[in-house]
Amino acid sequence: IQKIAVLTSGGDSPGMNAAIRAVVRACCFYKVECIGVFRGFQGLVEGDFEPLGARDVNYIINRGGTFLKSARSDAFRTVEGRQSAYRNLVDADIDALIIIGGDGSFKGGMTFNQEFNFPVITIPGTIDNDINGTTHTIGFDTALNTVMEAVDKIRDTASSHKRLFFVEVMGRDAGHIALNSGIGCGAEEIIIPEENLGMERLVETLKKSKASGKSSSIVIVAEGEKLGKNVFELADYVEKNLPEYDVRVSVLGHMQRGGAPSCFDRVLASRFGVKAVESLLEGKSNFMVGLINDQVVLTPLDKAVKGNSGIDWDLLRISDMISI
Ligand code: F6P
Image (cartoon, rainbow, N blue to C red; front, side, top):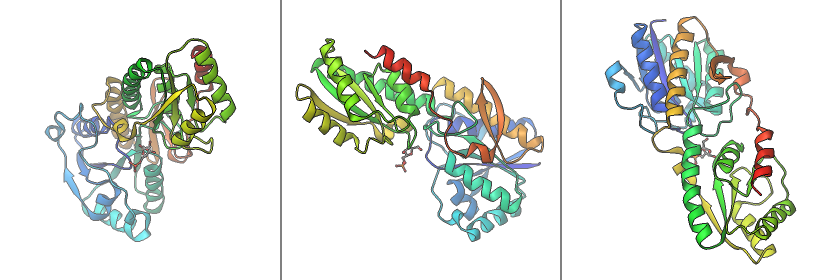
């Protein structure tokens, strides 16, 4: 392998730049050329390539987002689009591809690998942490800290006004952000799609919380929650059933995807980037790099794309025990 291309795809996450930097510098170390592909798969289809050297990735380890940009590509979903991507890679003498992204991007990479037998290694970069084969995805830790800081601030106003806040956090259909940030913020209740909590239990918890003398309450709601109600409808329901509460809703939104990556995410991204390059140089393909028991390991891509790594039910138990 003489030339490796790298791209970021899907929703950006803090730490993607640190991963690109690690890929570029590992390539320099092993005297392999590195090519940056701009705008994800769309850039692959259009041949939007630029060589990247060690100095092109100066001072990006600390920056959120991705300087290679990210995009959704309808063209790459078509056979013609993927053929064009393959032609562009071959014309540029590129031997292998590193994809930094989430589940959807991995599926694209796997299809591409199967169709053209082109070497692909993926790196999990998403705030949602919803990938099999890794306990942590790049950006998850930073997003948790962002949510925690925001909710700590909301708690100040909640306790000053004796209010109940419903805070909606991201995560697509997974509850990892909600569950972990909820514990970190001391939320009274955490609503995640993986658990069917039920409206009665929610009302019950909040009643108990009030009776126990708490002056404020925070309920963290994962955006993919499945109580059949969105966060505003949940808040309305609770307000109707518990008129003693002064209820407010806060949707944190895309702020959770931005900001400087945490140290954990920078280190994780650096480890993943180096492992991705080394794996390709060892002749491996169609794997995702991931973290298991604090070791960077490879998981076959078809297992990595299969959904999410599952909720840690013990965290829910702990939250229920100590959020009284
Ligand atoms: O996958 C990351 C994520 O931020 C999810 O948590 C969220 O559901 C989704 O992307 C939002 O996507 P968009 O930026 O396209 O609105």
